[in-house]
Amino acid sequence: MLAVQAAVERSRGVARQALAAHPLLDEHHEVIPALLEDLLEAHREYIGW
Amino acid sequence: MNPLKIAVIGGGSTYTPELIEGLLAPELAVRDVALVDTDPRRLEIVGGLAARMVAAAGEPFRLLLTGDRAPALDGADVVITQLRVGGQAARILDERISLGHGVVGQETTGPGGFAKALRTIPVILDINREMTERCPDAWLINFTNPSGLITEALQRHGRGKFIGLCNYPLTLKMNIAKAFEVDASRITLAYFGLNHLSWSRVLVDGADRTDELIEIMIAQPEHRELSGFAFAPERLRALGLIPSGYLRYYYETERMVRELCEAPQTRGELVRDVEARLLAQYADAAITAKPPELQQRGGAWYSTAAVRLIRDLWQGEGREHILNVANNGALPFLPPGDIAETPVLVNSERLAVRPVLTERNGEYYVGKHRVADEVIALIKRVKAY
Image (cartoon, rainbow over the protein chains, first blue to last red):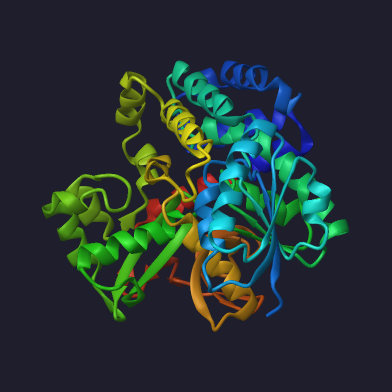
């Protein structure tokens, strides 16, 4: 749900919430900000926010 | 049934010859197939092979190759989306960036699937909006990953008729039929969960033989990866369910990250290389059928699943498909509008979800088998993300 919301609203805040809610990242919350920025930067051409 | 017009968005995919082979089968009446792709080179190569396949079959339908969605969507009965925004290069970045941060790097599961959803959802919703003008009665059949999230986006923000389709459930069924040495028509999957996050009990001729299948998987090496991964025997026995191979990323997370990091290539890099070889073969004007190497690309049974679904949407007799649709009670702990991957009876445009789980006193069962609380909890968590 949060992932869909992030895509539709183009929201970094919701995107961070989505990743924080993912069970595979339960023990990796410290990497989420950098991980998100790296993904958004790598795909700037396609995501654009 | 009037012959159908089918638009394929992402028609330059290396999967397309597989799909064309299915559309050429006599069980479907097709008048037009339009392959749409934003990459003119891929459209020329893949479309060229598709044209030769259609010609070799006696041209039972017209084939349009175009970079423009409009003529493809105009009057379409079915729109199949099998696109990959950013191509394999973007997928490889998803994998490598995630692994670089020490977490699972995979196409649909975890942050890789998340990034793919961010790239893909706006494009799919745009296609859906254009369909409301050009082919408002058409079915959108989405094969694009992450299929669960894409279908959820359509459910919440789209219009019209849509279904999420994945080849995994049919592949699982075929593998189980092989293990039991029976025709697949005798197998019924009591299947529940989300796309790439699913579990099954298995019935043969209506009798639950899941426990026997688990012992076959444990004892017979050729069937050990029947569900996509060789899970530990104690996990299979404790679950009492056949877990989707994609659950390895949840059940064996540390091992998966380690193995993905140590592998010489990510799956995306491997597929990129396979696709390069495939495209070289597709470009050979002497080839008029899909090459055997396409099997290495993955996507087994994709064409069969898609063609059977289209057939039953138009002339169905209540056959069962496992699809991504509004769960309507299939997952009773989720709102009915949330998308689940669930058995559905498809009967001439009517979809009827066949619930597999029953709830008794806060516990969930498949038949007489109680589903572990951790399974339900994982579905809830992944749906919330």
